Image (cartoon, rainbow, N blue to C red):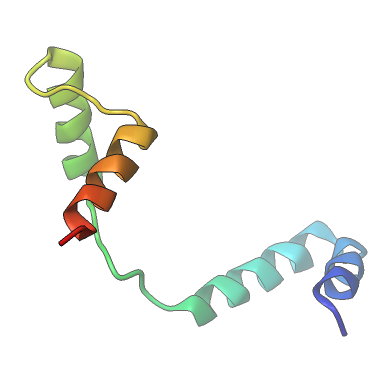
Length: 71
């Protein structure tokens, strides 16, 4: 069965069963490789909002990562 077929079947489930299915699928992924607390996110947002640090665009981030990978 293809992903599209599974998706079509899942759409026919009642919302509570769709939620159960989503929850079970997410459990199978396990814990993420990273862990950032809500407090850490709030601290970083405050740093940007206050001007303590400057934000960069996604493109700047990717360019920096590419630079780091070059010998």
